[in-house]
Each structure stands twice: as structure tokens, then as C-alpha cells.
Length: 401
Image 1 (cartoon, rainbow, N blue to C red):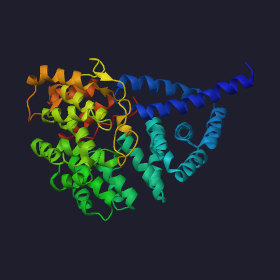
Image 2 (cartoon, rainbow, N blue to C red):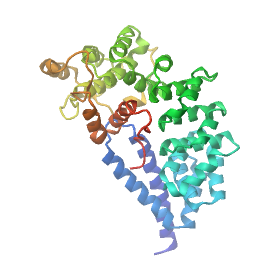
Image 3 (cartoon, rainbow, N blue to C red):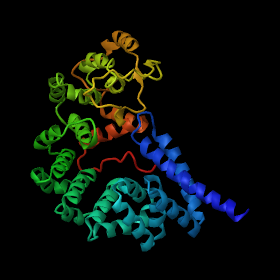
């Protein structure tokens, strides 16, 4: 086999690995992906990375060249995996210097630290946590987050770091179940930095202290960004009737309708079904309302053929254009068929109860969803399960399978 053919094969490994990581990054929050799908994707990604490993120095040079040329997340992930595995300070330093200059590559670098085998990456994580540069300490904390590594005493020290590092440390405290740090996390509810206050509240709830923390999460509530992370926890942790009433009370606010449409699925209360079916005629809410209806009832728009072609966008000019990333890959519901289905089945549901995929929410139904649900459903179930065990790490639904 000629040198040029071998070069092409190695380059193809690098290109395909970068592309597959992008697919993986999207799949972890897709509404139609299961753990088995992620496993198959991970196997394909690992096979291409292994091809680069086998190529040795040549494989690194190809990955480095692609990263240097494109400086995109997929290429950053591939180069970072090979760099961390090589144990070469020069290679790791090169990757980190580039990614620090381009914040959009941070997520891919963290993902690489979650991909590399733990025994190869532990020293890098310790080194990052002790680095003099805040950006490196932040990366080290993010690596602990994806791997659910408890930094022990170092975590307490990092709770007094710069705002960005402090916020990530507060988040990690909740993720790894550090109930011994609850006093320090609770003190951060009064932090001067807004993001720190949010993550302090988020972790307080996970660690079992809810009253003041829930109010802070309510203040940040939205259907996107960290506000959505807060809503997912808030609606699960708060008293069911209080949470239902909170959403019902904001129904007249058009700016809160996406929040209601998404939150109704979390609460799982049939009281929202009539509102959801009405909003299924609104192009800006239809898919989100359809997903929540599925979550409450267990009825699949796909399997039951209760979806239609995309609706024309008839929203007002002052509303934001374009779909939210959360709506992507969701079906457009067939309102007529759904209302007919509900007329025949609503007697099986009682208002004031929380349902998940058509079943009353119990420990058994949560375990079933976590074992066999979609990745998005598993993430929700993991939060529910974590709320009953504050000292147990929150399961990472996006971890390498």
C-alpha cells in the first residue's frame, strides 16, 4: 500500500472522528435517541480514534494539522484526546492554549477529558485543578463534573476562587453529592455573582436544602440555557400542587408560554392537557406542547401516526424567529387526532397526580425510564432519583457508554 493511500486513510480517520463527535454532542439531548444509539455512536467514534492511535506520530500530526486548520469543536476533541493520552506536556499545552483562546472549543476539550481512560487522565485533572490560571482550574472542574470525580478538600478551596471557577465548583458540589459542603454552598446563595447564586441554589436543592434555593431557581426560570436546568430541578423538587399553581399563574404571560409548554411535561399533571392541545396550533409552541403531551400520557406521536407536516410560521413579527434547539427533531402534532385520543383515554388520568409516560410516577417507573427511556427522558429521571438521595452523585447521562 502506497504512502499516499495510508495518508488518506489516516486523514479519513481524523475527519470521521471529528464528524462523529459532533453527532454525539447533538445526540445526547435529542428527543429520539436511546442509550443503545449512543453506544453504537461511541463505538464508531472510538474505532476512528483508535486508527489514529495505531498510526502513532503520524496520527497525531494529522489530527494536529486538522485542528490547526479548522479550529472547530470536532477537531478540538480529536486533538485533545490524542494529546491527553500521549502524556506529552507540549501537545497538551498546544491544545489548551488554542482552546483557551476560543471559548467555543471548551466543551469539546471537556468531552475529551471525559473520553480518555481514567487512569490516563487523573494526573492531568489534578494538574489542572492546581494550575495558577483560572481557565485551567475551570477546565479541571469541568472534567471532574463529566466524570463525577470528587476533588475532596480541593473543592472547598475552589469555592473561594474567581467567579467562573467558583460557579463551576458550586455546581460540582451538587453533582457529586457533597452534603458535607452544604453550609458553604448555602452561603453562596448571597454571592455577589449571579451565576454563582444560581449554581449555589441548584446544588442546595440537590443536597437537600430547598426553601430559599427554590426561590432563586424560580427567578432564573426559562426554557433555554442554565435557566432551563434550574426549571428541570425546581419543578421536580417543589411541592407538586405549588409547582402546578406556579405554572398556571403565569398562563396569561405570552413570554412564559414556552416555559409552561416544557414545564407541563416535567410536572406530568393532566390539568395541563387542554392548554397543551390548544397551543399545538401555535407554530412556536406546537412541537414543545406535543412532547409534553407524550411525556404525560405515554402516547407516541410517531408510533401512533399522530403527527403532521411542519406548520407554517404564523407568529407575530415581534416574536423571535426560528426554532429553539429544544424543538429540533420533535414531531409536529396532529391536533385533531390527539384530541380524539384524549377523549377516549382521559378517564385513565387524574388531575393532581404526576404521570410519566402514561404511568403514575413512582420509584419503579423512574427506574424503568432510566433503564429504557430516551437520553432526554433518562436525564429527567436521573434528577428525580437524585432528589431522594442527596449524598449520591447525580448520574451523568452524557457519559461515554
